[in-house]
Length: 198
Image (cartoon, rainbow, N blue to C red; front, side, top):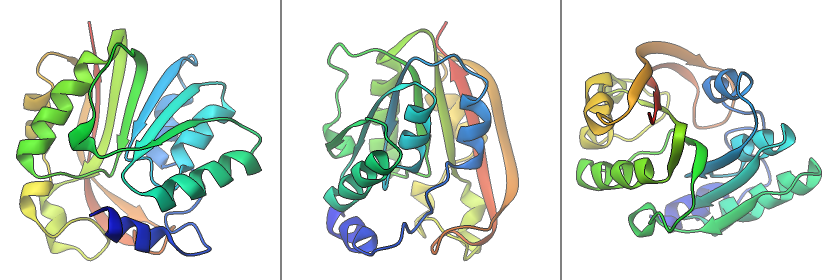
């Protein structure tokens, strides 16, 4: 799968743009800066934006091309991010604690998703937040992006179950309109989730 993402990112332009994703920006703009983890960071648009706000940013992705472009974007914006090349299946919480974990359009088959989400909860500080924006199962009928495997898509109920140890602050199933990027374009069905470790 890393070869797929390396091929997608191995172009001059930023395929999902360089501006932060809308939901991520809405949430982080209202938070005090702290320590952030961005799994599936891709070309770095959210990680770099957070660093520009003073966050200590740790990010990872399976794509070395994504890492290369994210570090270029960070340099262009005069910020520093720590970015590793890592598969989600190999991620473990090794004593690091984060005030915010942000997962934006990162999709897995259900068995990996559940294990990964459980591991992320261990990495939160008390009062720490997990933010997720992901394609809803209804997205499979649309051509605006996302996997064509229903098992890799979610619902609000699925995320509430995965994160039943968190206090749920937001869990919305909504339609949005993508207007930027070459692979996310048009009307889309998404879930926006925000949970807190209490």
